Image (cartoon, rainbow, N blue to C red):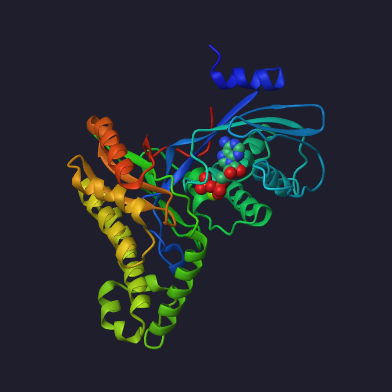
Length: 382
Ligand code: ADP
Ligand code: MG
Protein backbone atom coordinates (compact mmCIF):
# COMPACT_ATOMS: atom_id res chain seq x y z
CA UNK A 1 0.00 0.00 0.00
CA UNK A 2 1.25 3.46 -0.85
CA UNK A 3 1.74 5.75 2.10
CA UNK A 4 0.37 9.28 2.27
CA UNK A 5 3.70 10.87 1.51
CA UNK A 6 4.05 8.87 -1.71
CA UNK A 7 0.57 9.97 -2.74
CA UNK A 8 1.49 13.58 -1.99
CA UNK A 9 4.63 13.26 -4.10
CA UNK A 10 2.58 11.85 -6.98
CA UNK A 11 0.16 14.72 -6.65
CA UNK A 12 2.96 17.28 -6.85
CA UNK A 13 5.23 15.70 -9.47
CA UNK A 14 3.01 13.25 -11.33
CA UNK A 15 5.31 10.26 -10.80
CA UNK A 16 6.34 7.86 -8.06
CA UNK A 17 9.30 8.90 -5.87
CA UNK A 18 12.48 6.90 -6.38
CA UNK A 19 13.93 7.43 -2.90
CA UNK A 20 12.76 8.03 0.65
CA UNK A 21 15.06 9.29 3.42
CA UNK A 22 14.48 10.39 7.01
CA UNK A 23 16.50 12.58 9.35
CA UNK A 24 15.53 13.09 13.01
CA UNK A 25 15.69 16.20 15.16
CA UNK A 26 17.63 16.22 18.41
CA UNK A 27 17.55 17.21 22.05
CA UNK A 28 20.45 17.82 24.37
CA UNK A 29 19.85 15.54 27.36
CA UNK A 30 22.17 17.44 29.71
CA UNK A 31 25.23 19.72 29.49
CA UNK A 32 23.72 23.11 28.66
CA UNK A 33 25.80 26.18 27.85
CA UNK A 34 29.06 24.33 28.42
CA UNK A 35 30.04 23.57 24.81
CA UNK A 36 31.70 27.00 24.55
CA UNK A 37 33.48 26.42 27.86
CA UNK A 38 35.36 23.24 26.93
CA UNK A 39 32.66 20.91 28.27
CA UNK A 40 31.03 17.95 26.59
CA UNK A 41 27.36 17.84 25.61
CA UNK A 42 25.05 14.80 25.65
CA UNK A 43 22.52 15.00 22.80
CA UNK A 44 20.42 12.23 21.29
CA UNK A 45 18.45 11.98 18.06
CA UNK A 46 14.68 11.83 18.63
CA UNK A 47 11.67 10.11 17.03
CA UNK A 48 10.39 13.25 15.30
CA UNK A 49 12.13 14.46 12.19
CA UNK A 50 11.99 15.27 8.49
CA UNK A 51 11.10 12.99 5.58
CA UNK A 52 12.38 13.51 2.07
CA UNK A 53 10.89 11.86 -1.00
CA UNK A 54 12.93 12.50 -4.09
CA UNK A 55 13.34 11.53 -7.74
CA UNK A 56 15.87 12.44 -10.41
CA UNK A 57 14.63 14.61 -13.27
CA UNK A 58 16.09 15.31 -16.70
CA UNK A 59 15.16 18.97 -16.76
CA UNK A 60 18.31 20.41 -15.22
CA UNK A 61 16.32 21.73 -12.26
CA UNK A 62 16.22 21.39 -8.53
CA UNK A 63 12.55 21.55 -7.64
CA UNK A 64 11.87 22.26 -3.97
CA UNK A 65 8.50 21.54 -2.36
CA UNK A 66 7.57 21.09 1.29
CA UNK A 67 4.31 19.94 2.81
CA UNK A 68 5.08 22.30 5.72
CA UNK A 69 5.49 25.49 3.72
CA UNK A 70 3.64 26.96 0.75
CA UNK A 71 6.63 28.60 -0.92
CA UNK A 72 8.22 26.56 -3.67
CA UNK A 73 11.19 27.03 -5.96
CA UNK A 74 12.57 25.68 -9.22
CA UNK A 75 16.28 26.43 -9.43
CA UNK A 76 18.30 25.88 -12.61
CA UNK A 77 21.46 23.80 -12.11
CA UNK A 78 24.56 25.99 -11.86
CA UNK A 79 28.06 25.90 -10.42
CA UNK A 80 27.14 28.09 -7.47
CA UNK A 81 23.93 29.30 -5.89
CA UNK A 82 23.03 32.35 -3.83
CA UNK A 83 20.51 32.76 -1.06
CA UNK A 84 17.33 34.48 -2.15
CA UNK A 85 15.07 35.92 0.55
CA UNK A 86 14.34 34.03 3.74
CA UNK A 87 12.36 31.12 2.37
CA UNK A 88 12.86 27.58 3.63
CA UNK A 89 14.37 26.20 0.39
CA UNK A 90 17.56 28.15 1.11
CA UNK A 91 18.42 25.40 3.62
CA UNK A 92 18.66 22.57 1.06
CA UNK A 93 19.97 24.99 -1.56
CA UNK A 94 22.85 25.98 0.75
CA UNK A 95 23.79 22.32 1.11
CA UNK A 96 23.65 21.87 -2.68
CA UNK A 97 25.81 24.97 -3.13
CA UNK A 98 28.68 23.53 -1.08
CA UNK A 99 28.30 19.98 -2.44
CA UNK A 100 28.53 21.45 -5.96
CA UNK A 101 32.06 22.67 -5.23
CA UNK A 102 33.35 19.10 -5.49
CA UNK A 103 30.58 17.10 -7.17
CA UNK A 104 28.64 17.31 -10.40
CA UNK A 105 24.95 16.93 -9.63
CA UNK A 106 21.84 16.35 -11.76
CA UNK A 107 18.31 17.66 -11.47
CA UNK A 108 16.19 16.45 -8.55
CA UNK A 109 12.56 16.76 -7.45
CA UNK A 110 12.41 17.16 -3.68
CA UNK A 111 9.40 16.82 -1.40
CA UNK A 112 10.04 17.46 2.30
CA UNK A 113 7.71 16.79 5.18
CA UNK A 114 8.60 17.28 8.84
CA UNK A 115 6.69 16.48 12.04
CA UNK A 116 9.18 18.50 14.09
CA UNK A 117 7.97 21.89 15.24
CA UNK A 118 10.13 24.45 13.40
CA UNK A 119 11.93 27.20 15.25
CA UNK A 120 11.47 25.50 18.63
CA UNK A 121 14.97 24.28 19.32
CA UNK A 122 14.61 20.67 18.15
CA UNK A 123 16.85 21.48 15.20
CA UNK A 124 14.54 21.11 12.26
CA UNK A 125 17.15 23.17 10.35
CA UNK A 126 19.96 20.71 11.03
CA UNK A 127 17.52 17.92 10.18
CA UNK A 128 16.67 19.29 6.70
CA UNK A 129 20.33 20.14 5.99
CA UNK A 130 21.78 16.77 6.95
CA UNK A 131 18.87 15.06 5.18
CA UNK A 132 19.62 16.89 1.92
CA UNK A 133 23.36 16.18 2.04
CA UNK A 134 22.79 12.52 2.93
CA UNK A 135 20.18 12.06 0.18
CA UNK A 136 22.40 13.55 -2.51
CA UNK A 137 25.33 11.42 -1.37
CA UNK A 138 23.14 8.29 -1.60
CA UNK A 139 21.43 9.12 -4.89
CA UNK A 140 24.65 9.90 -6.78
CA UNK A 141 26.85 7.41 -4.82
CA UNK A 142 29.30 10.17 -3.96
CA UNK A 143 30.90 8.24 -1.08
CA UNK A 144 30.99 11.24 1.26
CA UNK A 145 32.15 10.51 4.79
CA UNK A 146 29.38 11.01 7.37
CA UNK A 147 31.44 13.60 9.22
CA UNK A 148 31.80 15.55 5.97
CA UNK A 149 28.01 15.42 5.55
CA UNK A 150 27.78 16.98 9.01
CA UNK A 151 30.34 19.63 8.09
CA UNK A 152 28.67 20.59 4.82
CA UNK A 153 25.32 20.87 6.62
CA UNK A 154 26.84 23.08 9.32
CA UNK A 155 28.52 25.22 6.67
CA UNK A 156 25.18 25.73 4.93
CA UNK A 157 23.67 26.92 8.22
CA UNK A 158 26.66 29.17 9.11
CA UNK A 159 27.58 30.66 5.75
CA UNK A 160 24.54 30.31 3.48
CA UNK A 161 21.74 30.87 6.00
CA UNK A 162 23.92 33.02 8.27
CA UNK A 163 23.20 31.38 11.63
CA UNK A 164 26.24 31.01 13.83
CA UNK A 165 25.56 27.57 15.36
CA UNK A 166 28.09 25.02 16.62
CA UNK A 167 28.35 21.46 15.33
CA UNK A 168 26.22 19.65 17.94
CA UNK A 169 22.91 19.77 16.05
CA UNK A 170 24.12 18.48 12.70
CA UNK A 171 26.32 15.91 14.44
CA UNK A 172 23.54 14.53 16.63
CA UNK A 173 20.99 14.14 13.83
CA UNK A 174 23.57 12.39 11.64
CA UNK A 175 25.32 10.14 14.18
CA UNK A 176 22.40 9.40 16.54
CA UNK A 177 21.98 5.76 17.60
CA UNK A 178 18.98 3.91 18.95
CA UNK A 179 18.95 3.88 22.78
CA UNK A 180 22.17 5.86 22.89
CA UNK A 181 23.20 9.41 23.69
CA UNK A 182 26.33 10.96 22.25
CA UNK A 183 28.98 12.36 24.59
CA UNK A 184 30.39 14.95 22.24
CA UNK A 185 33.29 17.38 22.37
CA UNK A 186 32.10 20.12 20.03
CA UNK A 187 35.64 21.47 19.49
CA UNK A 188 37.40 18.25 18.51
CA UNK A 189 34.24 16.43 17.30
CA UNK A 190 35.39 13.38 19.27
CA UNK A 191 32.47 11.41 20.63
CA UNK A 192 31.42 8.31 22.52
CA UNK A 193 28.00 6.70 22.24
CA UNK A 194 26.72 6.06 25.77
CA UNK A 195 23.74 3.89 26.72
CA UNK A 196 20.43 5.69 27.14
CA UNK A 197 17.90 2.93 27.72
CA UNK A 198 14.50 4.16 28.74
CA UNK A 199 12.98 0.78 29.66
CA UNK A 200 9.53 1.47 31.15
CA UNK A 201 9.96 5.21 30.59
CA UNK A 202 9.67 7.56 27.62
CA UNK A 203 11.37 10.81 26.78
CA UNK A 204 8.68 13.49 26.73
CA UNK A 205 9.43 16.64 24.75
CA UNK A 206 7.45 19.72 25.69
CA UNK A 207 7.38 22.67 23.31
CA UNK A 208 6.52 25.74 25.38
CA UNK A 209 5.53 27.61 22.19
CA UNK A 210 7.33 30.61 23.65
CA UNK A 211 9.36 32.23 20.87
CA UNK A 212 13.07 32.22 21.71
CA UNK A 213 13.43 35.94 21.04
CA UNK A 214 15.96 36.71 23.74
CA UNK A 215 18.07 33.65 23.07
CA UNK A 216 20.60 35.21 20.67
CA UNK A 217 21.41 38.37 22.59
CA UNK A 218 21.51 36.57 25.93
CA UNK A 219 23.69 33.84 24.43
CA UNK A 220 26.27 36.46 23.49
CA UNK A 221 26.01 38.00 26.95
CA UNK A 222 26.58 34.65 28.68
CA UNK A 223 29.47 33.89 26.31
CA UNK A 224 31.19 37.14 27.32
CA UNK A 225 30.49 36.57 31.03
CA UNK A 226 32.15 33.15 30.82
CA UNK A 227 35.20 34.68 29.12
CA UNK A 228 35.45 37.23 31.94
CA UNK A 229 35.22 34.50 34.59
CA UNK A 230 37.91 32.50 32.82
CA UNK A 231 40.27 35.49 32.50
CA UNK A 232 39.95 36.21 36.23
CA UNK A 233 40.58 32.60 37.22
CA UNK A 234 43.57 32.42 34.86
CA UNK A 235 45.35 34.98 37.06
CA UNK A 236 46.12 32.06 39.40
CA UNK A 237 45.08 28.91 37.58
CA UNK A 238 46.69 27.45 34.48
CA UNK A 239 43.45 26.57 32.66
CA UNK A 240 42.20 26.98 29.11
CA UNK A 241 38.48 26.54 29.76
CA UNK A 242 36.12 26.92 32.69
CA UNK A 243 35.40 23.19 32.43
CA UNK A 244 39.06 22.41 33.24
CA UNK A 245 38.31 22.80 36.96
CA UNK A 246 35.87 21.10 39.32
CA UNK A 247 33.51 22.70 41.87
CA UNK A 248 35.98 22.30 44.74
CA UNK A 249 38.71 24.11 42.80
CA UNK A 250 36.26 26.80 41.74
CA UNK A 251 35.09 27.35 45.30
CA UNK A 252 38.71 27.70 46.47
CA UNK A 253 39.39 30.41 43.88
CA UNK A 254 36.01 32.12 43.77
CA UNK A 255 37.40 35.30 45.36
CA UNK A 256 39.28 35.91 42.09
CA UNK A 257 35.93 36.59 40.41
CA UNK A 258 34.95 40.06 41.56
CA UNK A 259 31.41 40.26 40.21
CA UNK A 260 28.70 38.20 41.92
CA UNK A 261 26.77 37.57 38.68
CA UNK A 262 29.89 36.38 36.82
CA UNK A 263 30.67 34.04 39.73
CA UNK A 264 27.18 32.51 39.40
CA UNK A 265 27.72 31.89 35.69
CA UNK A 266 31.02 30.10 36.43
CA UNK A 267 29.33 27.99 39.12
CA UNK A 268 26.70 26.84 36.64
CA UNK A 269 29.26 25.91 33.99
CA UNK A 270 31.53 23.98 36.34
CA UNK A 271 28.69 22.13 38.09
CA UNK A 272 26.89 21.36 34.80
CA UNK A 273 30.07 19.85 33.42
CA UNK A 274 30.23 17.58 36.48
CA UNK A 275 26.58 16.63 36.04
CA UNK A 276 27.28 15.43 32.51
CA UNK A 277 29.94 13.05 33.80
CA UNK A 278 27.68 11.91 36.67
CA UNK A 279 24.85 11.36 34.16
CA UNK A 280 27.02 9.18 31.95
CA UNK A 281 27.92 7.02 34.96
CA UNK A 282 24.27 6.77 36.04
CA UNK A 283 23.09 5.87 32.54
CA UNK A 284 25.84 3.26 32.16
CA UNK A 285 24.48 1.66 35.36
CA UNK A 286 20.87 1.83 34.02
CA UNK A 287 20.09 4.23 36.87
CA UNK A 288 17.48 6.48 35.29
CA UNK A 289 16.33 7.91 38.61
CA UNK A 290 19.76 9.37 39.42
CA UNK A 291 19.86 10.77 35.90
CA UNK A 292 16.43 12.31 36.53
CA UNK A 293 17.69 14.03 39.69
CA UNK A 294 20.64 15.41 37.72
CA UNK A 295 18.19 16.79 35.14
CA UNK A 296 16.26 18.64 37.84
CA UNK A 297 19.53 19.96 39.29
CA UNK A 298 20.61 21.09 35.82
CA UNK A 299 17.37 23.01 35.36
CA UNK A 300 17.68 24.67 38.79
CA UNK A 301 21.22 25.74 37.94
CA UNK A 302 20.12 27.16 34.57
CA UNK A 303 17.30 28.97 36.33
CA UNK A 304 19.09 30.36 39.39
CA UNK A 305 22.75 30.63 38.40
CA UNK A 306 22.74 31.01 34.62
CA UNK A 307 19.32 32.73 34.42
CA UNK A 308 18.27 31.48 31.00
CA UNK A 309 14.96 29.73 31.71
CA UNK A 310 11.85 31.92 32.06
CA UNK A 311 8.37 31.33 33.45
CA UNK A 312 7.25 28.99 30.61
CA UNK A 313 10.12 26.49 30.96
CA UNK A 314 9.98 26.75 34.76
CA UNK A 315 6.24 26.00 34.72
CA UNK A 316 6.84 22.76 32.80
CA UNK A 317 9.59 21.67 35.17
CA UNK A 318 7.58 22.66 38.27
CA UNK A 319 4.75 20.41 37.09
CA UNK A 320 7.22 17.58 36.50
CA UNK A 321 8.68 17.95 40.00
CA UNK A 322 5.21 17.45 41.50
CA UNK A 323 4.33 14.46 39.32
CA UNK A 324 5.36 11.11 40.87
CA UNK A 325 5.57 9.50 37.41
CA UNK A 326 8.35 11.82 36.27
CA UNK A 327 11.97 10.97 37.14
CA UNK A 328 13.46 14.26 35.95
CA UNK A 329 12.97 17.24 33.66
CA UNK A 330 14.87 20.25 32.40
CA UNK A 331 14.95 22.88 29.72
CA UNK A 332 16.98 21.91 26.65
CA UNK A 333 18.73 24.21 24.18
CA UNK A 334 19.68 27.85 24.63
CA UNK A 335 16.69 28.66 26.86
CA UNK A 336 14.24 31.58 27.17
CA UNK A 337 11.59 29.42 25.49
CA UNK A 338 11.82 26.47 23.11
CA UNK A 339 11.53 23.01 24.64
CA UNK A 340 11.85 21.12 27.89
CA UNK A 341 12.37 17.37 28.24
CA UNK A 342 11.17 14.91 30.87
CA UNK A 343 11.61 11.24 31.70
CA UNK A 344 8.08 9.92 32.19
CA UNK A 345 6.69 6.48 33.10
CA UNK A 346 5.42 5.07 29.80
CA UNK A 347 2.18 3.64 31.25
CA UNK A 348 1.34 7.07 32.73
CA UNK A 349 2.32 9.17 29.72
CA UNK A 350 -1.24 10.10 28.66
CA UNK A 351 -2.15 11.14 32.20
CA UNK A 352 1.08 13.19 32.39
CA UNK A 353 0.44 14.93 29.07
CA UNK A 354 -3.15 15.75 29.95
CA UNK A 355 -2.22 17.11 33.37
CA UNK A 356 0.67 19.18 32.04
CA UNK A 357 -1.44 20.59 29.21
CA UNK A 358 -4.02 21.83 31.71
CA UNK A 359 -1.49 23.14 34.24
CA UNK A 360 0.49 24.98 31.56
CA UNK A 361 -2.58 26.54 29.98
CA UNK A 362 -3.85 27.77 33.34
CA UNK A 363 -0.52 29.38 34.25
CA UNK A 364 0.65 30.69 30.87
CA UNK A 365 -2.55 31.36 28.94
CA UNK A 366 -1.66 29.38 25.83
CA UNK A 367 -0.94 25.75 25.15
CA UNK A 368 2.24 23.71 25.07
CA UNK A 369 2.72 20.80 22.64
CA UNK A 370 3.82 17.52 24.13
CA UNK A 371 5.51 14.72 22.17
CA UNK A 372 6.58 11.20 23.05
CA UNK A 373 10.06 10.16 21.91
CA UNK A 374 12.89 7.73 22.40
CA UNK A 375 16.57 8.00 21.50
CA UNK A 376 16.67 7.02 17.83
CA UNK A 377 19.17 6.45 15.06
CA UNK A 378 20.36 9.30 12.86
CA UNK A 379 19.75 10.08 9.18
CA UNK A 380 18.74 6.98 7.21
CA UNK A 381 17.14 5.39 4.15
CA UNK A 382 13.49 4.37 4.50
P1 ADP B 1 14.95 24.98 14.57
O1 ADP B 1 16.19 24.45 13.92
O2 ADP B 1 15.09 25.25 16.02
O3 ADP B 1 13.73 24.16 14.27
P2 ADP B 1 15.44 27.20 12.79
O4 ADP B 1 14.87 28.57 12.73
O5 ADP B 1 16.90 27.04 12.96
O6 ADP B 1 14.65 26.43 13.95
O7 ADP B 1 15.04 26.40 11.47
C1 ADP B 1 13.70 26.34 11.04
C2 ADP B 1 13.63 26.52 9.55
O8 ADP B 1 14.15 25.36 8.85
C3 ADP B 1 12.22 26.67 9.04
O9 ADP B 1 11.73 27.98 9.19
C4 ADP B 1 12.40 26.28 7.57
O10 ADP B 1 12.95 27.35 6.85
C5 ADP B 1 13.44 25.15 7.66
N1 ADP B 1 12.75 23.85 7.73
C6 ADP B 1 12.75 22.98 8.75
N2 ADP B 1 11.98 21.89 8.49
C7 ADP B 1 11.44 22.07 7.27
C8 ADP B 1 10.53 21.32 6.43
N3 ADP B 1 10.01 20.16 6.82
N4 ADP B 1 10.23 21.84 5.23
C9 ADP B 1 10.76 23.01 4.82
N5 ADP B 1 11.60 23.76 5.56
C10 ADP B 1 11.95 23.32 6.77
MG1 MG C 1 18.03 25.50 13.83
